[in-house]
Image (cartoon, rainbow, N blue to C red; front, side, top):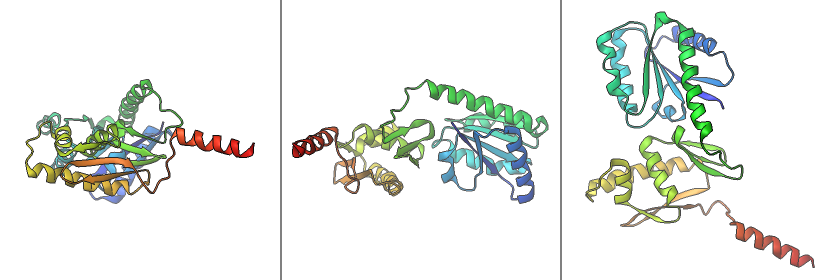
Length: 256
């Protein structure tokens, strides 16, 4: 299993950033780790872990903003490579990690230490995933909760945490209508039935439907005044096992 690790450079010093990237790659020193530079929050959904490179305490404001934005949407291992040891700022990190594990690595501890910490964390994660029931080879689509994604014919569609909760609910109720209230309860825990809630749900569905354009297997239908329906796309030819068997039997009979 290849693990994808992102590196977020808070400062725009391209030469220094390239050097740090090379040192981290050398510390990992294994083909099963892929290191990519993060420039957009949309990339986060594809990651197993994130390294945030901080050089000075003045960089922490931008780092905090990234962590606040990630707080609700993603579950990640996050390693903060800190150039300065500021104990007061360090105390704030646990409050920014609702769904993530944040660990601070001081620059003077060395990149080798960072590499060991990353390997240990991802080995632990992979061990847990290996204990889960393996996906059948014949499955052409499934939800990957560990990466917050929908996989269709090996095409990975990255989702935010709330988008994943919505698609999970629709997926579990395939070909059945899921109401606005049910979706709102799934992502916020409660529902008051107010029109604002319907607007928020509609906004999430809009973004999910755009992402589903990457494949042709599923589509989300709008059921006016009720909710939404996840169904097989009319663009994708779909045959049930019964239909396949009937087709095969017809061919045999035609040969007799």
